[in-house]
Length: 202
Image 1 (cartoon, helix red, strand yellow):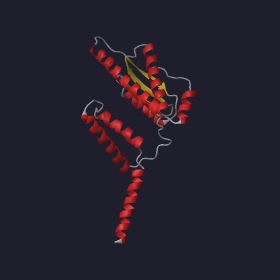
Image 2 (tube, rainbow, N blue to C red):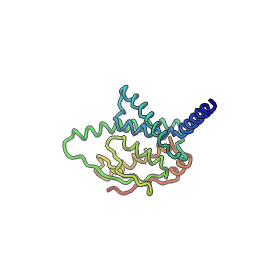
Image 3 (cartoon, one colour):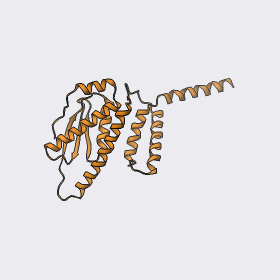
Image 4 (cartoon, one colour):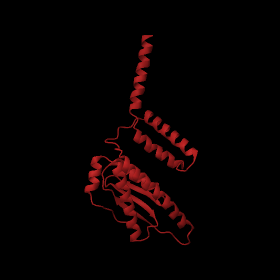
C-alpha cells in the first residue's frame, strides 16, 4: 500500500514538473501558427474552438517534447500591446481591400523582394516581426537570416522606389510596436539606440 502511494506521488510530481515546463508564450505562438494553417482568423464560432484546440495541442506537444526555456522571454507592456494589436488589425483591414482591388484591376501588379535588417537582436522579436508581417495581406516572408538579423520579404505592389521605401517603413514601424509591446528593457534600449536601417531591394 505504501509503495502504491509512493508511486502515485512520484507520478504526480513528474506530471507537475512536466506542466512546469510548458511555456505559455511559446504555446500561444504555436496556437497562432495553428490558426493561420486553418484560416481561423474569421468572425465565426469555429474560430474560438480552433483557438482552444490549437492551444491544447500546443501544450500536449510541449509535454511530450519539452522545449528548452526561452530566455529572457516576453515582457508584456499593456498600453503598447493595445497599440500593436490595433495597428496590425488596421493594416490587415486596409491591405485586404488593397489586394482585392489589385486582383480585379486590369494589368499586371508589380512586386519586389526587399531585405530588411532589424534593429534588435532578439530571436523572439525576429519571429514576432516575421509572423506579424506575414499575416498582413500582400506581404510574404521569403527568408530570414538570423546571422544578419535580416528578413527578406516579397511585397506586392512595391513597383518603384517609393513603394519599396513605404514597405520598409511599414516593417520598421511593426518592429517598433512589437518591441515596445513585448520586448525586454534591453530590446527597447537597442531599438532606441539603433538608427533606422534597411537593405537593398532585390
